[in-house]
Image 1: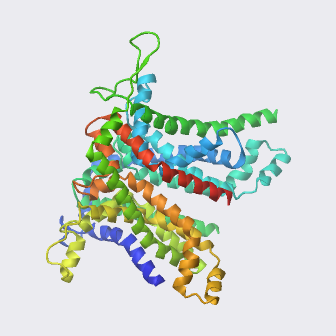
Image 2: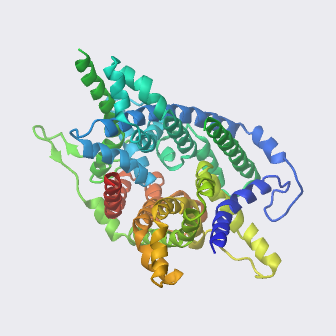
Image 3: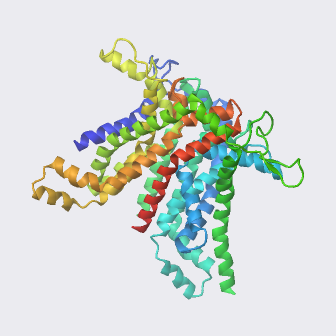
Length: 258
Length: 297
């Protein structure tokens, strides 16, 4: 019984991904014809500047927004865990929880309207592009980082930091020397989570990006709407390989530390 | 002196994220609410100002509920609302049916195997959502892999039309959101004391009866949490109905994008966003309550 439940469940989760990878090596352009093993779609992908440019933009957006979100999310988690009751705590908690469950069409529309209104009022941000996409991704990711870091911070004994302060360390120094190294793994996890969220986001990005700023998911989305294409099979497989390799490395590192 | 620096530091720690989330999350939602009352026009930006300053002295408020009246009187949007709720509801039930046995099996697996099994549930999250939905296009289309396999097995003669129907949307949503259902379920099932089941068995309950009387009721918080995590994003889903659904698949998230991008009618799109949010207020409030209870525990 249990074995069957697991086999069916995991089969359902993994079969589509496996088929995609296998079919990315199909020489034929058609899905229903196996034309033999070939890597020609990977070669074509590597020469497609459309996807390469979009991927480079996506990487820059993801690195910027993940880093900003990790800083903001860590500060937010610190305030929530260590500050006890303060005015506006309920609103603050709500603001950090809402992006996790808000339908993305609403978040995207709301941010776009903000950027348009701001541009009218103060002339910033000028147009839509790299900057607006980074601001939008940072906002959503901050909520996720807060959840991850807050969970870890809650497990750490505050008396450790108090001991450092009793020994003469200023609060900032005590935090950097004692608490930060202890919560560092959760910061890394939050940063990686933000990175993947940003690299994968379609809906919000579609609202807040401009004509000159096409991220990889937007480029993929617009070509996928026209139908199945072998080049996208190859691109999808590359993403699966990169993520798989990343996770194996992360797993090894964690094992090594234990 | 240290005290003063401390209080400044504390203020900064709170002010930075609080300020950011206020400016980039709270204020935008308030703008959506405001613009939902404005009158659409052709131009940049495509809405009339809410306040008329031309009369001198106090400005006159020009907003109205006309956009909402339009939404409620148009069958297209009313049916989009009911179809979204129906599709999200049925998908949530399917996720529960597939996810519960999996969660139970993971929770009762030996502790050493639980970690890797959970990891395998989370792993697809880290690959691209878009690519996973796209993979289904190649499987479900008329000359796709599913029809190919079924024809080869001799189950069907003519290919089944699945892609661009509601069925494909159900498959896509269940596939994409299944992990959201499994994770909270494993969380509650893992913590259940096996002694409870033993006690039920000692008192003569058969396994099925013990499951219905003990395991299932105790896992209710996990069922509620998982269902909300699937239902809420599914109601506003845009990518899946756009890629897998057909012309008559009518969901709110897609309708919102169409009004916004194709009609360039931002006030009506805002009104739709407010209506969508209002429909989700109850489930969102439930999430908030659950979260607070978990914090208290």
